[in-house]
Amino acid sequence: MPELSIILPCYNEELNLPLIIERFAAVRGECPVELILVNNGSTDNSAAILEGIFEKDPSPNVKVVTVPKNKGYGHGILSGLRNAGGEFLAWTHADLQTDLLDVIKGLEKLKQSPRPQETLLRGRRIGRPVLDNFFTWGMSVFSTITLRTRLYDINAQPKIFHRNLLDKMVNAPDDFSLDLYLLFLVHRLGWDQLELPVVFGLRKHGEAKGGGTMKGKIKLIKRTLRYIIELRNDIKAGLR
View 1: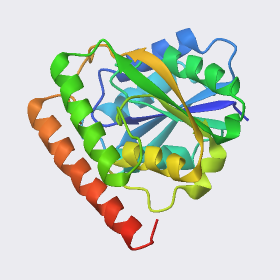
View 2: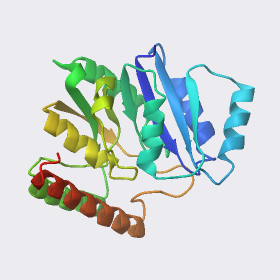
View 3: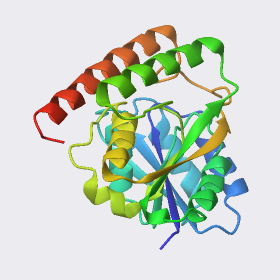
């Protein structure tokens, strides 16, 4: 049983996949960790790339989960979580903006907390452009006021937690709202939260799937706002 499972939802990341494997091999060291690559309904050459990688160098520490049709970022992560064997679970992006070494560092910090089985470790992005920080601040203020829950830098990565949280993740959304759902859930459960400052690097290859462009930011904000309102209405109705 690995101590940590890292889930990466991969949608059309064919050029990043070999780099992910190389980086994982370089940073995992002695830590009993598995990497779960979710081929999240990719329409590019991802399947062939992954097959070629494992034919050349099969690794028991790397697992592939295939989702035939893309149903969203959150669906890909949830599919990976259901196939994870680690005591602790983590997810982050497959664009290499978050270093896999940060995930392993995050686990060590989490294990040193007073109650690691009831603590969420989350990334806190530093050194970001002013515009990105502005959008993050605005969403944090709106979600905190609307849900009466302190929520900030919602989409920062990585997210790391004990696998006992899986049974409590009921009705989790299939899209980018999954990060917001997780933060809201651990707050309602009374879990502790830890931060790990992380530097988000530049995407190596391909296009951002979330808020990497202005169009993407607007789309992500609209969906997040709808989900915040949905959560608020559920709270009022006593459903959460």
